[in-house]
Length: 87
Image 1 (tube, helix red, strand yellow):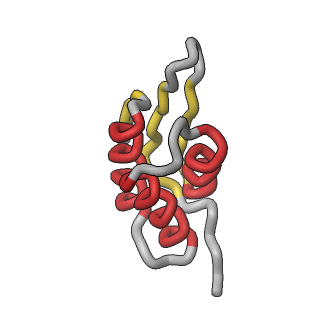
Image 2 (cartoon, helix red, strand yellow):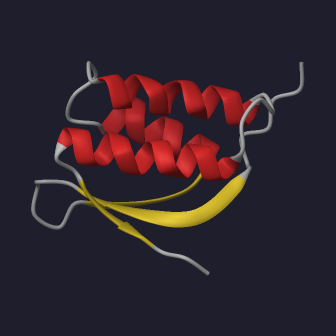
Image 3 (cartoon, rainbow, N blue to C red):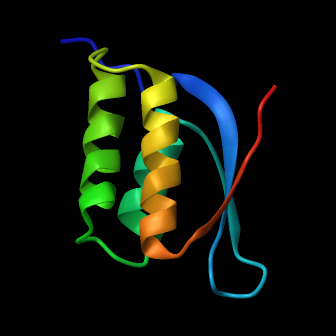
């Protein structure tokens, strides 16, 4: 099975509660790292959907747009600010 962690999507800027703490996410690997290492809560339904979307994109089972949408929903669920940029 081929794994592609570099699949890109239009960037999402995540804004956490800590002052000045921001994270730019634009690849499946960056999304996975944000969810696993930076996320304030790891038990929400949208969080789990976003983690699965990361794996699905890396293995070619989902599109990067699906992952981007999942990250935005997970951010909303966790109270993380998200600024979606579109090229």
